[in-house]
Amino acid sequence: MTTYSSPEVTLKADASTVFSKISNLENLRTMLDKVSPDKIPADKRQMFDNIKITADSIEVPGGPMGSLIFRVVEKRPPELIKLNGEGIPIAMSLAMHVKPEGETESKARVDIEIDIPVMLKPMVGGQIQKMANQFGEVLGAIPFA
Image 1 (cartoon, rainbow, N blue to C red):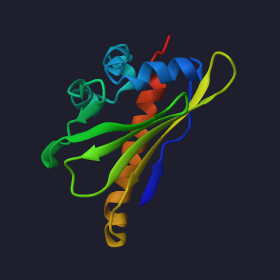
Image 2 (image 1 turned 60 degrees about the vertical axis):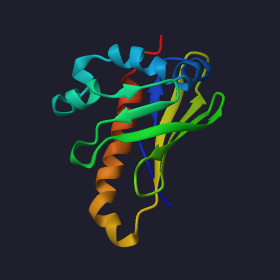
Image 3 (image 1 turned 45 degrees about the horizontal axis):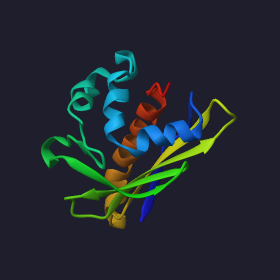
């Protein structure tokens, strides 16, 4: 397994608030709808608007390869929410790490773990890193208050 991590982002809410909001993934839709349009690149806006969310899963449009579905498999309040990829031919997980940073802020990072053959890493590694960075950016843009 290879891990691709987003840069750490600062969230304007304490870790418990962040965890309680994102541990039920349905809350993400309301929060995502509040993200300022200028925070989402124009070429990603349609994909962003077509994300499907249930209480325990996120379905992200994947273009010609089909959608990526992530389902919650682990929760550790207030620091971790882990989702596994479904319907894809390789093992893949997405983890959102949250750590307290004072009483009114927290830090967050998104990790994507994926089991790809060594010879394919140079071809797809950059895209997976970009995806991790985008998840991190979106998490950082969510107004938790």
